[in-house]
Amino acid sequence: MRVHLDCIPCFQRQALDAARFITDDEKMHENIIRAVIAELQGMDWKKSPPEIAHVVHKIIRDESGVEDPYKDVKKYYNDITLKMYPELKKTVNNSATPLLTAVRLAIAGNVIDFGAKSDFDLNETISLVLKKDFKIYHFSEFVRSLEKANNILYLADNAGEIVFDRILLETIFKEYNVEKTLFALKGAPIINDATYEDAKYVGINNLKGLEFIKVGVGIPGTGIERTSNEFQDVILKSDIVISKGQGNYEALSELRGIFFLLMAKCPVIAEDLGVKVGDIILKGG
Image (cartoon, rainbow, N blue to C red):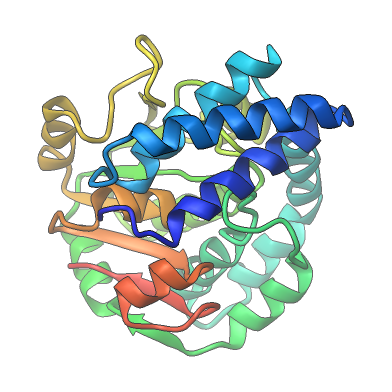
């Protein structure tokens, strides 16, 4: 998916949000925003939004000297969702359709996205998503793919949200004979995206048959870039690919055979999907 003009002010807003997480110094805020605006003016806007976001957040790191502006936010939501874990598991286990309920919860967790928005109510979102109709609903295709799958590629999105991903994977492992799962995480901090440290913190590393793969953030050595041939090979070798969130959709929406689980949180994504902001999506097959 190519960047839209509406994405450009969003990148500037992301930069200002990150700057304010780092410091109260308005001069630093101004320096970061000016540097981002200058870089955006000269960039190729035919790239995908994540590719441009990588550049924007590198500028933030370089200007501020802070590698992980959202470190405290990520820990906060990891802690909050871990406290919710027992009740969420009970909701799935008591459901007449455990897999579907786990899918709904995984999508509800996608609201924890400081790239798209920072004003959300997690508990309210969970309640709504458990009852809400899907606007794109390829659940039957999802089940058929799981029935045939020996291995899964799971593309994670945000810290905190990965507790919901853990519940979905635990439900899948209970119902289907999956031998191996590659769990893809960012290889370095960017916004509140999950890294290996977050996954270990919430216990995903303890799941049987699960291995980790690092996804790059536009910096050499941080992992496999989603636009690379190497990453395409990983996708092709996977029996089923489960992709969480808007960023992964933006990067991979033109590829077939991927199941996208997300909440449409911005007008650009909603328009691309043919839905409205706030709608929930299980798209693929």
